[in-house]
Image (cartoon, rainbow, N blue to C red):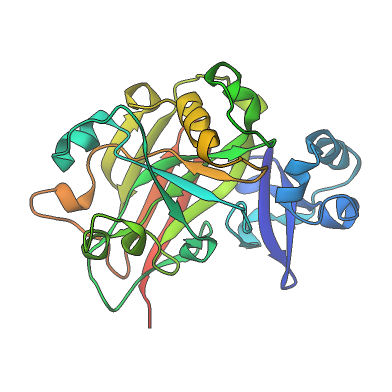
Length: 287
């Protein structure tokens, strides 16, 4: 199933999608399940996926997806953990030596935008870069999770654009500033639940900027697999339902092209994960 967070008459809520393509409609789940789960994060935490599916079976989905004001899939995660340099071709184009362990950094929720919202280019820099990534959403709490058990902790998957302000990212050896500018990271359009994607299934991920493909790769080329990331991260911090692990970008980023290519106002950027869907954002200047 596909689950989203959105605004209904200005109020944050969440729902389940029915139909496909132009015929997608949404059932608002909060009026039906809000006493148990006021948001999507709590639906995941309470393991109410079956209840969400049952609600759709018993109630019509009347809200047209195309008309909704969406929110980032999980608007209020406890943690957003991002992985750097996790594809061989991106490692090579970055000119860095491979490491045995993942490079982890954090994002804050305010750095994100939803599907169809504008990613903002700040006035401090014109070096706004794209990064197509697969987002893994955690489904149950865990600490020191074993790789062999890791798939059981995945609630679902989404698309992520780890928008980066490259000069700010490289001010120091710490990437935080360039990875957390206000409203620079896209997260959406929805979460596809883990039962729709087999553990270890190869997922293709790509970026198109104004219709031109700039990145294209798949999870077979990851340096650190999803189970390894879950195991490693859960050693130093307990993972909680609704936590997001953003699993790294392949080669082809604008900062490493000749000439360099950065996103600018008026651009349209599509991040596609083949088993999930397409996250689309426009680019605007932050005033």
